[in-house]
Length: 94
Length: 426
Image (cartoon, rainbow over all chains, first blue to last red; front, top):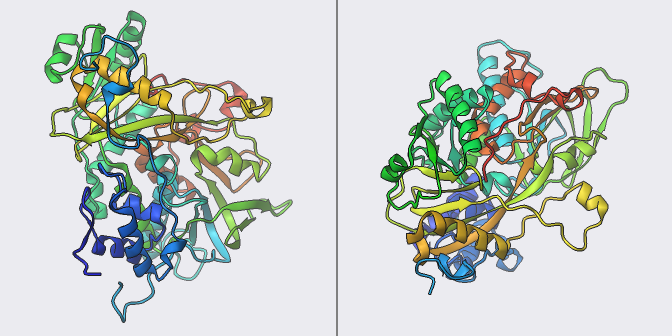
């Protein structure tokens, strides 16, 4: 993979960033997430997780099917704060 | 792919070394910062020909043993706040020093930690809380922290989007800060590895045995990646530290509590200080990445399947709850009604590591020479790690002892010599 390929568009994480994490010694997917910030933007990994797993597998030589996805976080999609407020009276929650 | 001709990259998932001088259990910021400070002090001492060298070359052999991955516990899950507003002099002075270390961290360690000095604004609703806050401010001023008690009108001037009507006053210190926590961990980890520290992830310590009758520590640790001996063991496992201590039959008085946090979509910079409500424990700030990051204190409800034993000895729980999202959204929109259309991108939980008096536990465990603890940081260990680790390294090397090792000694709980810290947030 060309090093400048962007794997995570939300956080601008490239193939080179993943390779750098691996070269530094951080090879677990959860570590690569916390090292590069991939998967923490609006898509929450929906676009980039597979691409990063493939780049990580290529960099470590591990089979991609052996890499577990990171813990997914609620909410399922970015959701306005007003929808979590019960009851009337909150500005904008109509 | 790594280029051909380059050596095998370092791995944190290899077998553990057979013998070390210091085994640190826990690869969070406390363990990594301690490993770094200890390695740096011992490397400096050996090149100067000083120190108590234990092997050729003089540098201490240090291993960090982490059951999960680096930054997987509270260190990778906190809000990144750095403040000097506390109610005890020890915490105020330590955090002054920690802020200085943090301000130099990016240059010293070569890593961007997204530090932003926007101050901290604590809002209060009732007279009793205001009286306590005034006492804390007076103490902070004695330590040269420029905190002021301000009116709600002045608070409104600082953050015009706030609805300050429910409040009666606020404290404001412009020199407090926020950082993005993750790069701190990598900065310490990489620097420690360069100094020869061996870091082992996905390496759970399963047993710790101490040679019977030995005067100094002589420990054998079994891990999921092999066994090792250590002259000294430091328990820096945070919320998991009671479990680690139990391996040596030591009962620690701290316990874990789940605290939740959320992050919104990134917004244009508009919010300068970290804003917090003292009565509810709600806090939120805007990171340099643009997101609003915040949490609120939410009492734990015992789960139905839990027996008395689980209630007496809580486990670390990290599940996310809708109840938090509802409480946080309500609190945030009450405070800043204009945020209704701002989107929550993610929520997660981290474990606070709590003690009865709101203060940490540091130092050698009485009756177990060579076994040290560094835990009970009340959900504020991240901001304290830079300074605590520095003093802990000097303490372990026998070069200097800081008052924290007396104030935060384990035996204070049995002795009843407790000085409570009141400014615990989140």
